Amino acid sequence: LAKTTQPISMDSYEGQEVNITCSHNNIATNDYITWYQQFPSQGPRFIIQGYKTKVTNEVASLFIPADRKSSTLSLPRVSLSDTAVYYCLVGGLRQGGKLIFGQGTELSVKP
Amino acid sequence: NAGVTQTPKFQVLKTGQSMTLQCAQDMNHEYMSWYRQDPGMGLRLIHYSVGAGITDQGEVPNGYNVSRSTTEDFPLRLLSAAPSQTSVYFCASSYRRTGTNSPLHFGNGTRLTVT
Image (cartoon, rainbow over the protein chains, first blue to last red):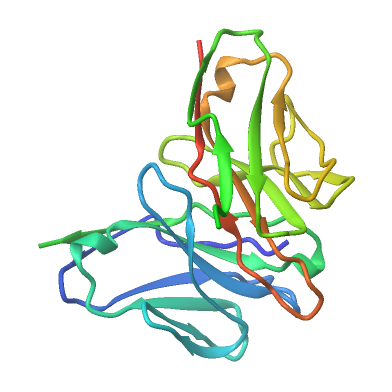
């Protein structure tokens, strides 16, 4: 099971780009990398997923280097509403069902 | 489409009482799981199921039982509640199809207090 390490917290200002990096040194060949966002009093929700290189959707980009031992979630031009906890999850249901979350990164966006 | 529905939203128990947290999904997902989240902490996996009739333990299974008699439902039972089980509980579900890696869909949680 791939263990993940993320910064505990980050601060940013509105309009800035935020990059959150997750380390996963023992990622397995078939593991995917998935990022979730959680607001207070809500369940986490899916942001983006990737296997290698770069993935982009309407809310974020995910950069994965060739060795796949880390990944970076990039949030362009953050707003106050992006204040949340962000979790990196490494694994896949094809390898079983034991999906272990790390501690997450608490992002605080200031005006 | 309701997604993942958890009931109740809030519950207060006395030490030693039993209760069942309900989780239902209407997306025909094979995979379902339970997590607990304590203040300022991440999500810890309690139990999971990859299909009806199949369950397995996660990181923190002690004090909790589960069963999966249907695809839609995955109840979590506390047989004898303890104050250490005060937490917010989240249920999640996903497809588990060969060749894909579908993300988890979470419910909105059950906030449990054990006094």
